[in-house]
Length: 147
Image (tube, rainbow, N blue to C red; front, side, top):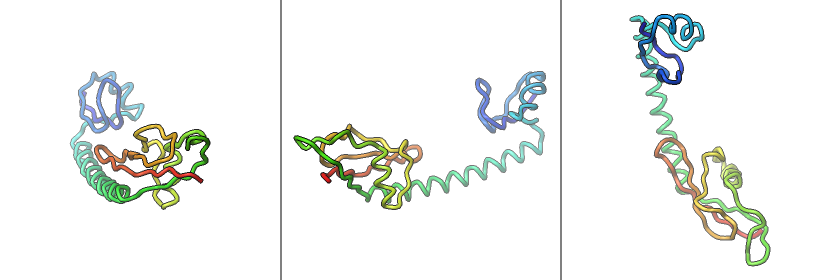
């Protein structure tokens, strides 16, 4: 039985794949669960249209990510912290702090996409990397200064 997967199915395939399965597995599990549909001529044409639309959306997303990367490459943020002896920070500067500093500059980035190259526990200049999409990973300068 030939089916088109509507969602990723473990050990079978990804969404949009055309797979060959046993009739009982397809008829009794995949189709009733909404995980697959019959691979008819109309469904195959619809799948092609959906793939084309997804590719166009992905291109737009990549273009937006490249624009954001250019904007981030030219951005540096300053984070003010309280310090103790030897200019050491109370605690450390985290990716959350960098995300909040970017938010003040009207740039919204999820804190989970920001990675610091090293632990920030002293004053100075550091680099943070933002994982946007795929290989697009701009770096931001982070200045840590005394309050």
